[in-house]
Every structure is written in C-alpha cells, then in structure tokens.
Length: 150
Image (cartoon, rainbow, N blue to C red; front, top):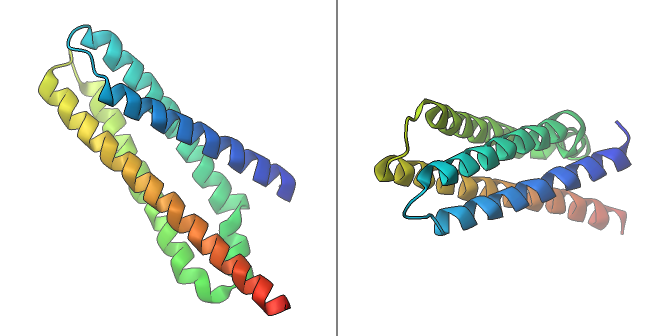
C-alpha cells in the first residue's frame, strides 16, 4: 500500500477511535436513571463501531504501517514492536469479551451496567496507553534516524 494512503487511513481510524472513545466516556458519565434500554442500545452500537475501527487500525499498523518499517530501520526495536503487537491481541480479546457480554445480556440492570462500564473504561484507558507507547516508539525511531543523518 502507498505510504500516503497508509498515513491517511491510519489518521482516519485514529480520529474515529478517539471520537468513539470520547462518546462512550461521555455516555458512561451521563447514564440515565431510566430508559436504560435505549442507553444500552446506544452504548452497544458505539462499542461495536469502536471495535471495528480498532481492528482496522491495528491491521494497518501490523500489515502496512509502522511496525514493519520500524523493525527494518531499527532491528533493535523488534522486541518493543512485538510487545505492542501482543498488546493488540490483549486489547482485541478484552473488547471481544465485552462485546460477547453485551450480546448475552438480557434486560439491563444497574449492576451489570456498572460492571460493563468499568470494563469498558479499563479498555479505553489501556488503548490510550497503548497508542501513547506506539507514538513514543515511532518518535524514538525517527529521532534516532534524524540524529544519524546529522
């Protein structure tokens, strides 16, 4: 895939992920006392969209994105890249578990919703930390590149 296309697609996925995470957090903070069915349906729909975009984002990174490039340019960073790749599986597994719980849930009750919101908040925080680590790795690799060229 063309490098410009990769950058564009990565940016689009990243933007969508951040918007969906913000929407989910906002909905969790403003959970209604009644009409939980409608709220739960909205949360499920947002979460399903988030999962789709996270999968797309990770796929771009692993197949066409920075991971291969970083390893080719800086082989010493291969263990760090592999750790990030493993974190992709951790995040996706956690998200798929949450989605499965949402599918299996009957009518929403406060305890189940509290549990799912806690899990969702944890996944969102983990995802943000993961993206921060990826950005630091890329910046470190580029900084090394720049320093080597001076």
